Amino acid sequence: MQATISENSSAQAPGTGAPAVRLRDVTVGYDGTPVLAHTDLEVGWGLIVGVIGPNGAGKSTLIKTILGTLRAWEGSVEVAGYAASSREAREAIGYVPQREVVNWDFPVTVADVVMMGRTPRLGWLRFPGANDRRIVAGALDKVGMSAFADRQISQLSGGQQQRVFLARALAQGGRLLLLDEPLNGVDANTQETIGEILRGVKSEGGTVLMATHDLELAAAWCDRLVMVNHAIVGYGTPAEALRPEVLRLTYGGQVLLVPEVGNGNLGASTVVPDVHGHPGGQPPPGTTSKVL
Amino acid sequence: MDFFNWLTDPLQFPFMQRALVEVILMGITCGLIGTYVVLRGMAFIGDALAHAIFPGVVIAFLLHASFFLGALVFGGVTALSIGALARNRRVSEDTAIGVLFAGMFALGIVLISQVQGYTADLASFLFGNVLGVSVEDLTASLVIGALVLILLVLFHKELVLVSFDNDMAEASGLPVWLLNLGLLLLIAVTIVVSLRAVGNILVVAMLVTPAAAARLWTDRLRVMLGLSALFGALAGVLGLLVSYHANLAAGGTIVLSVTVWFGVSLLIAPRHGYLSRFLRPATKSKLAGPEGVLAQSDGHSHVH
Image (cartoon, rainbow over all chains, first blue to last red; front, side):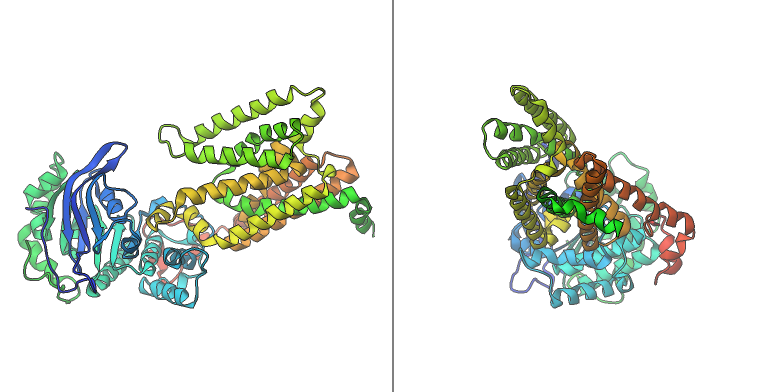
């Protein structure tokens, strides 16, 4: 398993030949302690990519590094060919943080929260206009929350909160969607809605990068998995990334996970047809033939 | 008719007219900025800033300089120091604030103890002297009030984003640190213009209580800003009039008025008041939306 691959999918970012995400020899962490060391990664367009690994292994760190809120100590991070945290890179991204980071008793409505996705694009001293309201309405419609537009956010269930965050990320208008544990504590209905939206982003040529604990859903939804354990220990299709030896590298001593996954419906032999048949009959752009 | 006289009698005196305008301006300004103080849990910071301004006021008094300028300088320095210390991971923010404000306040006390017969001055610094408000004080309050209002309108969407979701604000490339510092400075200048009316010790009440009461009446930020300003101004007027007629300390009476209103709101406010919660136990049905039962099935419902 090599850490980098170049997969030139047919759906490139218009005008650039650059991949969605490119990390070269990146070391990054907090307070002088590296979390990810000498990491390379290249992710193309038109993919749903799961970021898998134990707690504290660097899933959120990876996402924040791509997002640009965490600066790499060494190496280079590019989003759509632009240096991370540059204006162009930020505008290429829609971001769904972990639900727990905000105060859901804040006195704003669902539509207000989604409108926050427009704030960076609007710039200073500009107020949202008709176009922004149209985008917000469209995003709410996509996540099935139009009926809740005027609801105060404390009245939402966990799943509904997650949909609102997703709508906000869509309203940002970027082609790379970064999601930090979007499936934690959401109901089955919301899970399905999120899956549909992610597949929609992919079918329009965008790329989704999603940190998750849910190996089963990751195997079912994702075209690629990034296996993280203080470095990227594996990158490939779910069939390749969920092999026992890669799982052992990812989860280390937590052997309990390995046999469970290996013997269940996530084994390489069962997963391959299932994964490629899953995304609503749409052939994933550029991903069906050549991997690794 | 009696009530009308009760309202208008005090206004025959110019000092009462000035005091009335002052408490209205203070109530509105504190109510607006206090909304952010409450929503972001900055009550302690507000209190600290108020105390830290004290030595500035004393130094201005000793040098016969502008009271306003001295307070402004120390408010600004303290806001900057809190902002800077908050970036240090080894000193937690509330520790930094605790150290800073007690130290500054002590400095003020040591300085003013140098003044002969200082107790009277000390009292007016600490508890306010709204009846001694000058036309210049009013002008300062008006300018600061207008500044706060304009900045809150112009930077509304950025302030809301940084207050609601710091992660997203950082990811958007907003200068989060600068916005937070700007907010601290606005709180500092608001405190400075409020010192005349309610003094160092009680100013935190004007920052926190009207906004806390307003939060009980609405779930909309814009409405909360308006109500908070309204409650602050009304409490100012009511407290001033009661203090005039009953011969009580104005600052304390103003703060007590708004505190009582908070208590009343806690009881009778729709939706969030105790009374309405008691009368409306079947809250669950409020959740039923397009998702119906599923909305409650994931175990994370926030039922209010």
